[in-house]
Image 1 (tube, rainbow, N blue to C red):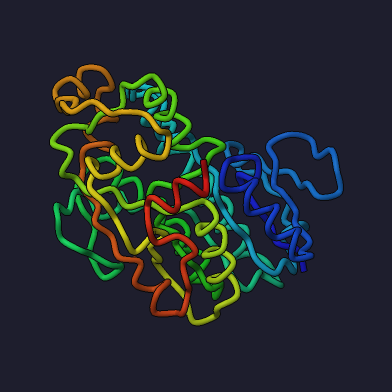
Image 2: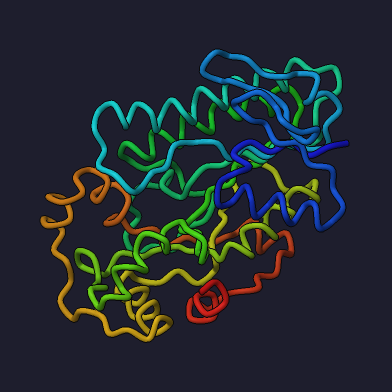
Amino acid sequence: MAIIVTGASGLLGSALVRALRDEGQDVVKLVRREPRADDEAYWQPDRQEIDRAALEGARAVVHLSGASIGGRRWSAAYKRELLDSRVQSTRVLAGALASLSAPPEVLLSASGVDFYGDTGDRVIDESQGKGDGFLSDMCEQWEGEAARAGEAGVRTVLMRSGLVLSGKGGVLGQVVPIFKIGLGAPLGSGKQYWSWISVDDWVQAALHVMKNRDVVGAVNFTSPSPVTNTRFTRALGKALRRSTMPIPVPAFALSAGLGEFARAALLPSHRIRPGKLLDSGYRFAHTSLDEALRAVL
């Protein structure tokens, strides 16, 4: 009764694998090369290849594969890579799960709060419909492929994650060096809401929904305390004991430097409520941004 994990070497995957093994769970990682250990199985979604025998009889599957959203400008080719790395891999995985004689009980498939588009200062939960833009469209297609497993009877959870805070990478890995030299500043108006979650809460929330059979469909993986970008900037500066710039980085400058990535990922507002996590009894370890930053840094 193994738990299968794709993207196991990434920030979230590696943290989840550690937590599962600490619980005594048998974990098998899907890898895109020749397996080198008993806890690895082969898949190559670009060629529609996957080891179905490794999936047969698994307890759960956690799907976290996908090219990195941040860290580089989005060319037309890279946008295609962002889309294909999610949609194609999910199509192959969900299709394989649907074909098994003994499918897993549950599929946890990654997604993002970008599904909702720019929602301003409105508090929204999982009942909110799809928004506009490239990332929203990508999430819709991504989730649509995962839904094929649900149609085959596998309980499917779509993990719509906000900004995951970790001292080992992710968004903090990109911005902490800038803050450490005193150049941290609000972005654009600074009024846009950023919905965040500590990596510890992300992992524990994944374990929670994996075990809770009543949780199904889209689930917001965010803290119940989203903050504005200005508030986030001040909190991170305080956690690092560094001053921050009083003047925001203008939206046009962000667009000039980072292109569509800035307009699609940094400037939209997501004031998200994790309705299904709260309603199902999940208790967050970190509801305060200051507390979360101290914990992860």
